Length: 65
Image (cartoon, rainbow, N blue to C red; front, side, top):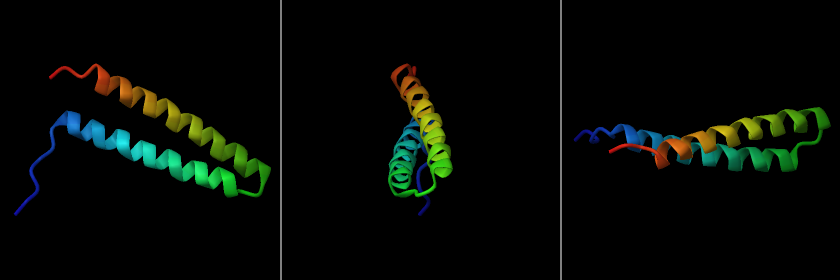
């Protein structure tokens, strides 16, 4: 029995959820990292994920059914 195909909006929702998980993982990483230069790199990644989360959220909000 194969899984039903997800529509485009469901795919975007899944991506949004995965980005939220990525952010949580990165927040855990930034709280446990020791070297300052690594912390800066992780914080930069968090900023990029935040931007992607905002963009994905906007896509979901404006999605035309």
